[in-house]
Image (cartoon, rainbow, N blue to C red; front, side, top):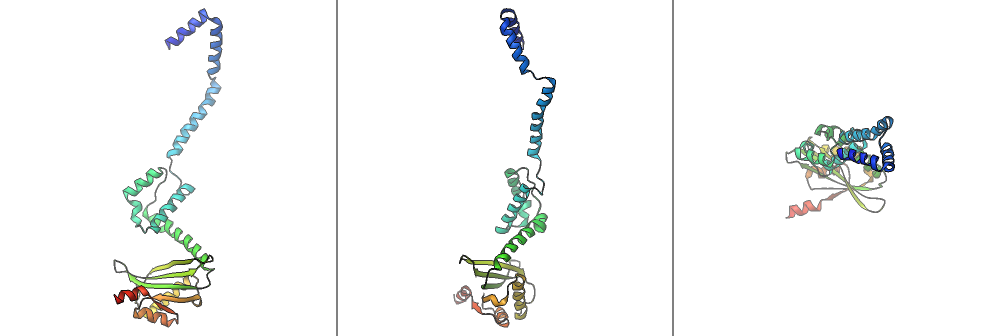
Length: 235
């Protein structure tokens, strides 16, 4: 600026020693061409960092996988509809939490993410069940709100730390005729699919439906009547 120029003229005329020292300091502070070129590198890094900060994660990156798994857990544990991941509010929430994460659509979760989570959880449970010597089961045949029939099977056992554990092994779509013979075969297949031998089952709890009572009888399994069901009938 003009003020700076006037100051240097004043120093040169009236304070030559100070002017010489000032010029030396100015020269040291001014980068050479080569230094200026190298000095641009930090700026370039800053620009690159800025682009990285807005670049979407690769789907195979650890961060992307971790978030996708968390969303899968949310859908599975809270029994949320797959359409949740395509709802505008949920997508905006995810974008605010991490703007670099690209949320997949429902097809990816239904065909890839959730099946992977299921196989992982199933593998862990199968490994735990290998150490179970005896177990009991509970079964129920029920219909959804849309009148679709399902057969559920839950296992109960004592773990190595003497803790009571209960795990639902299946809630399988069961459109077949609900005869005793078909139900009996369905329960047998369910145990076999988990590598559970029938002789390790100490008992099975059911309601008092004639078909399920006969189904258990056909297998010669010990059956316990569901107290809740009997109480409901009494009331």
